[in-house]
Image 1 (cartoon, helix red, strand yellow):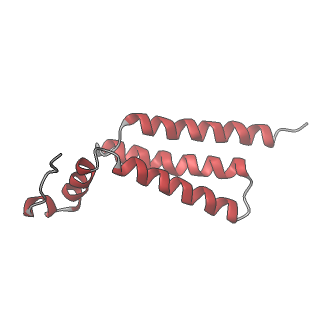
Image 2 (cartoon, one colour):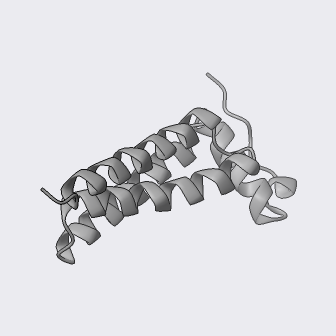
Amino acid sequence: MAYPILNATDTEDMFTLLRYVNNVMHQLFFPVMLLVIGAISLIGSLLAGKPIYKAITYTGFICSVLGIILSLMNFLSFNYMYFCFFLTAIGIILTRFAEAPS
């Protein structure tokens, strides 16, 4: 399997370089980066003392914003962006149930 060769025109700006990296990794670079950013924000929220339902909502929102930006730049498939929206919705539902009066 031959990979595209990096040349001087592939490094002329950051957008072209990131597009090259994403193509070499078979369109999996940004989904993995989104997963890592989500994991870091979830663990950071939990370590800051937030309940799990608020941490999931926060992580889903951060990943949704990044997913929208990356999808508009054609770095990320829309399916990953929709998964982030789903994660945010699950967090909102959990927050609603956890904070509902009994």
